[in-house]
Length: 212
Image (cartoon, rainbow, N blue to C red; front, top):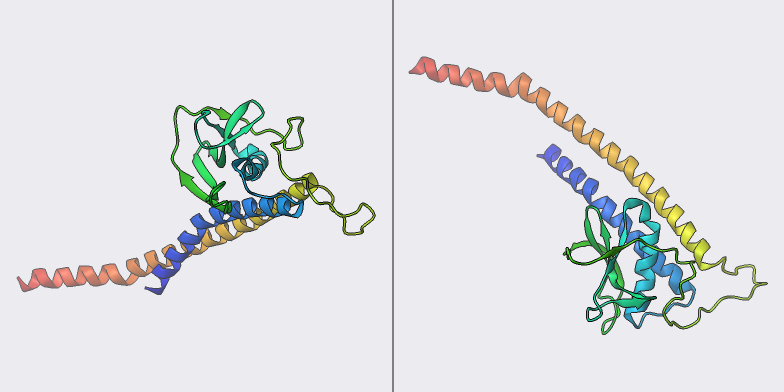
C-alpha cells in the first residue's frame, strides 16, 4: 500500500509541476510590471501581463486570441484580443483569474479553458516593439544615479524568463527522478509477484483441483 501511495504521489507531481511552473511565470511577469508602477483597473491593464507571457512562451507555440468588437477583451492597435487567455497547440490556457473589471484580481493561474474555432489567432509581438501600448499610468522609476535603479522592464522580464527556464530545468530533473523511482517500484513489485504471489496462487489452484 505504501508503494502504491508513493507511485500515485509521484505521478501527481509529475503532471502537476509544469502547470505550477507556468503559473509562476505569469506571477513573475505581473510582479515585474508592478515594480514598474503598472496598475490594474482595465482589461488592457491585464493584457499587459498576457501579451508578455505569450511573447515569452512563443517558442512553445503561444498565440494571442482574437476577439470580436462586442466581446470582452482589450483593443490594442487595430485588433482586439483576449486579455486573460493564450492559445497553444495543445489547448487554450487561462493565465489570469478574475481579470479586468469589476473584480480586477488578475490572479496568475494556468488552467485549461474552452476554445472557439472561429476565433482568429495572432502571433505574439515584442512588448518592446513600436506599437503604442494602451493608456496606463506612467511607471514610477527610481533615480538614474540610484545604485538600486531598475534596469528596465525588458531586462526584468528577461531575467524572469531565465529564472523560469532554470526552474523548469530543475523540475524536469525532478520529473525524471520520479519516473525512475516509479519504474523501480513497478519492477520490484513485478519481481515480488513473480517470485511469491504467482507460485502461491498456482499452488492454491492446484490444491483445489486435487480436492475435487
